[in-house]
Amino acid sequence: MGEASDAALLLVRVVLGAVMAAHGWNHWRGGGGITGTAGWFAGLGLTRPRLQARLSVLTELGAGALLSAGLFTPLACAAVLSVMLVAGLLAHRRNGFFVFKEGYEYVLVLGVLALALGAWGPGRYAADRALDITLTGWAGAGTVLGVGTAATAGLLAVFWRPTRED
Image (cartoon, rainbow, N blue to C red; front, side, top):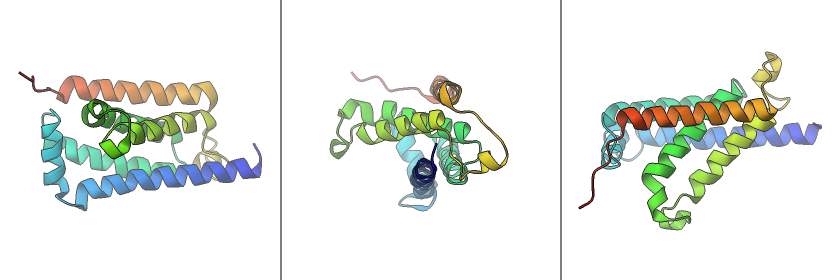
């Protein structure tokens, strides 16, 4: 990869990391804070919604920081993918594709970007590179996909109890 590609990966990582951190901050300190986020999660059918709100904040802030630094990039991308899968499945899927109708368009783009970043790797300007942590290509994408979907499946199996519509 050339210098322009490494700079592009830095830009993608930092922007995706900032977006995730902003989501985490908003769930923690914005609007209704943890209480409001927990209420929203309860409405999506998640049990232990206050715990889920806190875990969401931790995951989004943590993934955002790790991505921005380029540290443990595949695991940070897996966290992003998992958050986007949960959001897409529980909050956006039933609304169709377009984000302006509360659809899954936005979470799809962020999730696919996280998966692609797992394949591309963090680039030269990353803590992973300085620490000689190399997991890219199919192995990186597979790690993101495997860990991200396993985390999503685990969360849904343990904490999701959808309400039945009559």
